Image: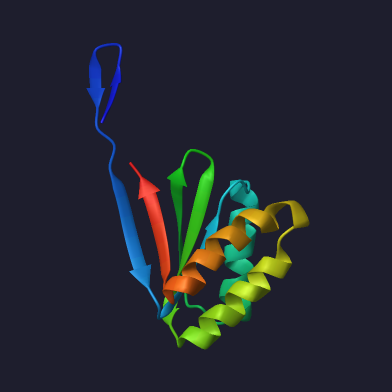
Length: 111
């Protein structure tokens, strides 16, 4: 809970976790580029469809609509990593490392 000018603002964090689908946290990447990545990987990997979430102001995540095994999920995440410009890879690498330890992917959104 945050108090601003005597107003109480409650913030919620919603999370979704899976090890059977591709999700990727694309923080600090412009929405146009996020859409391009989603379209490209949806077509090239037959991912059926996607949902783009604004997880916090200016930060986005993509959830693809196809179940698959964990090893395939990791291959696609690796390809997304190398698809990004070098300056955007660090944020994704930090997120992916935590997901690898857990053996599942989690996307969190603040609302």
